[in-house]
Image (cartoon, rainbow, N blue to C red; front, side, top):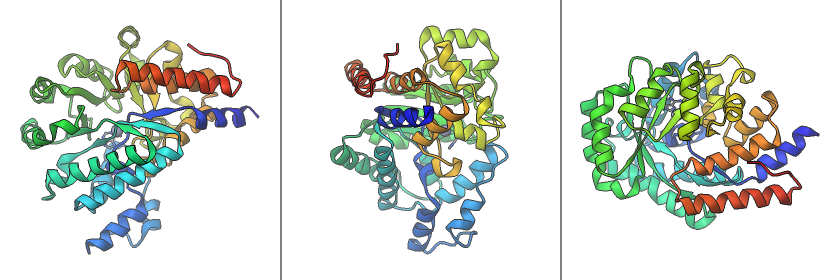
Length: 345
Ligand code: ADE
Ligand code: ZN
């Protein structure tokens, strides 16, 4: 009974998704469809065999397969179809605003032009906004396993498309690649008026969350779950209301936690951190955003107030204007009252 009520609320609440990698939304069936289209060989015989290979021991074992899969994305139409497919799922989950990541270097290194990638994605985001009313802000990321010089070169290639971007992120293999490695390129990013977000404290230490905040001047931290190892840092995140975009199912599939019951989402919510729950790379980790919320509701015994706070944080932590954020908070409160719920913060 409790779960039925929470499921209804979770589905009905307006939500924003702040942590999803477009390349990570590639469903195995689409991988095979695109491999056939481009007449490329793929080392798995079919989609089911590929899905069976989604067993990871850490972030790197996932990234190896993720980059291999992304190799089937070759032209503007592929990026358009990929993005549209994600948006359809987002609409199904009650998401009204998305801030997806993509990794330009994964494609430009294979000879795919930046223009094909960006225009394919942006065309779909515009179509999704027109068709479904889902607003968006787009975030290209630098791959942290590559050098800062390569990030600089990529940033120059991104500049003609600057108008489409709101922030630049940092993702890929965290171990061995601290935020400070990219200090100079992110100074250039900020000089152009773009915001900075960074994956930090997923597998790397809490100290790298501080480093991303101080040396890169990141305004939002992706994952950030290892902040719980540093009480002073948690205090600072609360005081400054720095959003953390956590991805609970991802953390379990990549063995950051042995089970969802150990995930710090509820602890962070109760401490007053502006934490959100997102999907990261949904087909790889067994669920889109709503499935993340429902799994957490079950395994962490979340209550109505937690879900309402997650919905509010997803908008307040976004790059929407203050006015738009306030409008979403009002809408969330209306949905809660229409379902006969109590109010939250
Ligand atoms: N790229 C796609 N998913 C990622 C994750 N969870 N961490 C770092 N880089 C990623
Ligand atoms: Zn991520």
